[in-house]
Length: 136
Image (cartoon, rainbow, N blue to C red; front, side):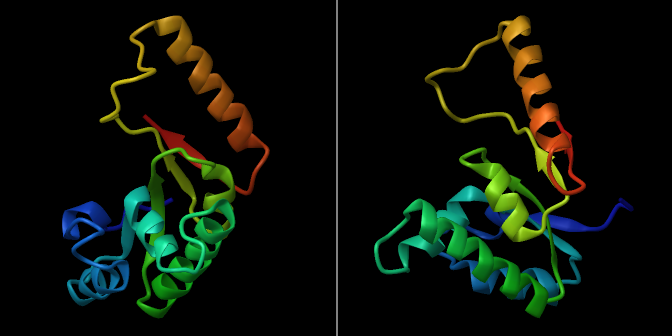
């Protein structure tokens, strides 16, 4: 995948203040080729769908997001956050998984054995999907 200029959706404002559609419009207006989608944006879009941020509505929000990206001629480069990420990646048409640093405090470990095991699991899961790369 050739490098392209992209911007993190979080850099364009928090989801509860700046709706995703406006962020995508701004990214396109400033000549970005892609968006690094923060999970919060997907979740807030799902909250606007009757029933709230259910699994089904999150997948529907991913479909809406992909359509908005296509309309703005943006590529969704990556999704930041791992909640049922593989399904979301498929719907979004994303080619890259980002294993980000975390802002969570529970369930975090510095144990290298656990980290290596997690990375192997990610690689195995990604190998079963459409062409999909990941980086840490």
